[in-house]
Image (cartoon, rainbow, N blue to C red):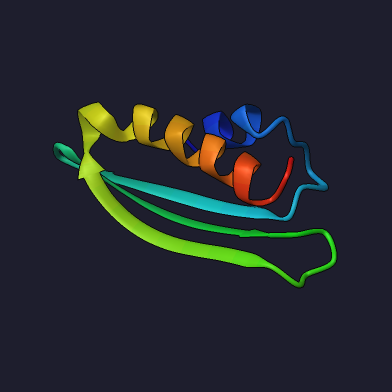
Length: 71
């Protein structure tokens, strides 16, 4: 899921993004941090979702970050 978010944002190793996912049973916990290149804006979130919904959540989050950060 971490790579899926990076891919959906069109980023590489220089993108100011941190994402970690822990899957336990049927739950996926995602922790995400994203910042603008100048560091003036940032986004941080911890979310637990059913494992079956985790990828769709990641794609929705990517679209929201693109909109909020004009990517």
